[in-house]
Length: 592
Picture 1 (cartoon, rainbow, N blue to C red):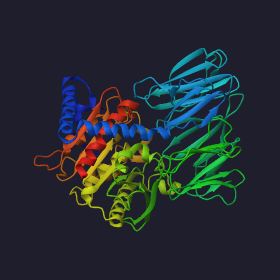
Picture 2 (picture 1 turned 180 degrees about the vertical axis):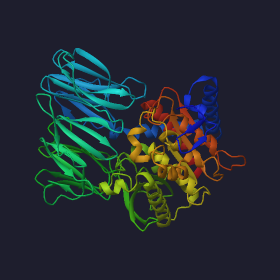
Picture 3 (picture 1 turned 90 degrees about the vertical axis):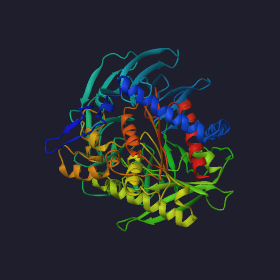
């Protein structure tokens, strides 16, 4: 379907004159990429200085150092999380790190996965003998996660890009004796592996979980239930139509969202709780992220509340964490959304200032994924040091509360997500007396869809003066009607299936930013976007279409996009650092 101007879905058809971009090849596309990058370069030269760029880049680099926290162990390995989907590891006693997506060791073998697709999320599995440090074998393409138990190594096969549809087992010493244990036939579901060892099939918050036995059979855990969290061959589970999890120990607050054999993480209105499986509360933070140990014995936590750098808690050992190099103020922001629902957010800023001088509002609200100020300083330090407040918003569609909260933001509920966000932005402006000219809204990936919806609704510039977005998902009508794209079928119940549900077309035609941009003008709003040519989740043509359609003659404010060659949905560290420094200088200079 990609690159054909006419999209015919049976009950209607429409024409997209920019469909040619979807091929992302040929001299016309190459010239367009060069044109957009030259436009951004010229904008940078006109609106920034080399001294500013160097200063912001150095500040970002220094701010990231406290977050480089080696906090987990797996056999002889020391593991440092680098983000939600990346880590680095080293052998104990050695200094050289290996970067990857997942890693695990039993003391005899090390198995890790890493991206060999230059950002395209094409994963390779590598197995190493711990004693000799020799590589035993490699396999690709595979899924991002692995597990093993004794001589059995479990990994996922790849049917097409980003669809992990088959569970394999092989001999961990040789990579041989390969056997398929399960093949997913339904393209709406994706598979993941959890240690040790559970297979999970998932579609828009609904799961089926299987325990993989030592004789390589799959035992379903609570078949017929809608969601399960497995531990010790048991699970907490929720029935369809209910928002209550069964088997949870008495006294546990909130909704489960992560688990290992020792601890449960739950969330409730943005707060995070840690319990053991007897129901005793072990930790609690009012905002941020707590990362469970899925590598070792499970007693260790990495806690990042956004106020101070991340730190380690272990229940069997008292760990002395370093004195924090920074400490931010955190204040709760509440608002009433358009339907009367109360929504919450957290704004963080430097204690040196009595109140923020400007606001950067962060929104996501998708996939049931929690929004968190964890890592706030590492991402936004140059702005924070210059008086900005960073507003984190807990929106329907996200994972900051119950499963029903997440479901309320799916499909046509996206308007709830949008209205929750806009209400919180307006509330923060009133509390801190910040003008729209000093308000920037930011969202990444699915958060880019949110930014586009907000611009659709508030194009005048009276609520915010700038939109900043990275790898934004904005071409909703074309993507949701193209099942050949990697994620489309798996996300029908998240964003919509207009080809088979006319009601989905009805709300998406009003929300899809790339389509609304054809007829909407936002002359007083500055828009800055970033994308990567190797992105397999949100293809680069999506934000390119959107930005070029947003430009109208007579615009007071520019619309610019940077298109990184050789980069994917997550930029490599050096490229990400340079791009972020440029973007923050642009935003700061525009506001001040």
